[in-house]
Length: 213
Image 1 (spheres, rainbow, N blue to C red):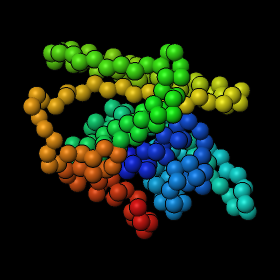
Image 2 (cartoon, one colour; image 1 turned 180 degrees about the vertical axis):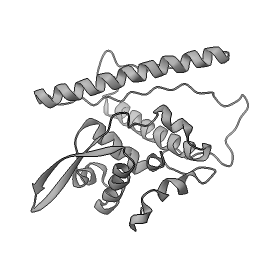
Image 3 (cartoon, rainbow, N blue to C red; image 1 turned 45 degrees about the vertical axis):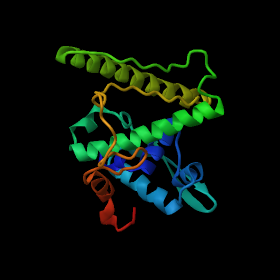
């Protein structure tokens, strides 16, 4: 969970959910220094979020290709078990990445390129039992989406069909109370900054190898 508190790791994980990629390819895709990308790839691998699936020789060197492991995505219920300060860091990174992708899709025209694009939200008033029922619906949907994703990856590995990227977002949360205004201690979207020590904890993972984050 600490590994996902850094925005670059979130972006790396997003890429390798869709395709196998090496650190050098990730460097080109994410416009980030190779040293930083390689460091964050090692952290993700160490924490079990990604796995090496292939190697290939390129320009006289051996490149290692990685893919996300099943159930390694922002929002899995396992990360709700971590301390609140660290949870905020992961949530901030997730929302920042999601908002960036949504804004880019809207500006580029792909947001509404499919007639069956899904984009909706609805306010609800629930009791404790209703809250639990909503959570159960989302968990069932997440399980089904995981199964679809795994099946698609297997089919495309066999057929060679090019993947169509798809961003799926699901959210159910308690909104800010009426009259609330932003103040000190607000989580910065798209970064690991929090009102506690979540960011510091997030970057502590993997530091024992002596590489700067």
